[in-house]
Figure (cartoon, rainbow, N blue to C red):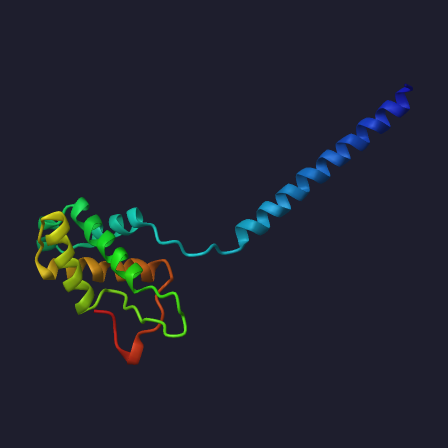
Length: 147
């Protein structure tokens, strides 16, 4: 192979390599510029909540206690899910009276533990703050506000 052909081949291979690198960088830049979907992660929610609990509640509720409340709330909300979406169920960020009562009942029955109602209500209010922080809370219904 002549020296001129070798230089031409190397130049061509270098150009192809640079085009591939440019295409990969362009693709990565596009992927990063698109906002991702909001994802609810129980451990992230628990950490967010624990950091924001008021001192009296923080003194009574450890991280594992907060996780237990959140897990029971998720289980409660899954029970509300319907196969027929023609009659959707409204869910309220921050919990409602039925959710709090059900969670208290389940934890006493299944886990043999109980927490003051106001502690569970605070955990659920802080969870609503977490949901709002990740952008998944809609406008309040009937002009109401989060508890």
